[in-house]
Length: 264
Image (cartoon, rainbow, N blue to C red; front, side):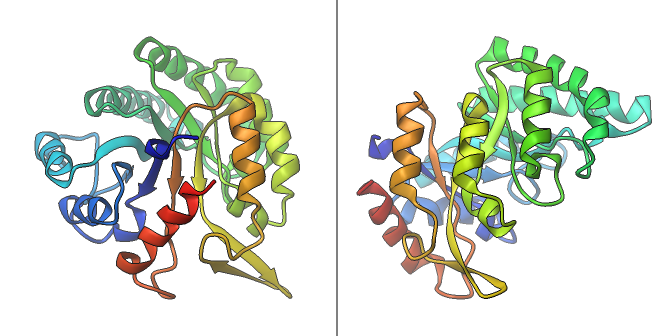
């Protein structure tokens, strides 16, 4: 795995202007970022986000926007035809932004809630979205976490099979799975044909409480994960997601995370 395939998420600086977040990530040693998909970092609506200014800020920071951490697709589960149509337009506009920025992928939201009963409603819209994305070389990945259909391994695979596109799949997040007491290694095997992106953080269970940790200090076996990802032919980025600013400031800790992950 080449070091240039390591990126980092701007999420921990989500309350700061995009330019400040991008500059901080560049200063920490990163050349790529996983841009959080809400204001003040991003919106597909040009009235809410100056896309040219965002491009200029990334260039000034010396980073490339490699993934858009958006939430497109939530309203695919709506009973309103108008809401579904609006959500599809937003999805396509976001895919177009990914092309403009040179991003390989975007994060999508598989409807709302965890009930697999919504799959017949959302699958056709994701199928259309995936076809649009495939024409433009952009991958769509739903992040596995609680409160989402993607947090249910079986349901996520069912949706992937219904969409049946290599441009639609799972944003694999092993720490989220561990936090939900899901075997992240078993989940990897189930998700393997559909993994399009990955977020990297760490943590461990201490009794009945899950504790976020620095990378390499938790229970997530990243040497195993990187080996498996590379063996299956994954050629995307590994996005380090620093979420423990209460433990140590990002400015001092994130460069160490980068150094640790480079050893893998």
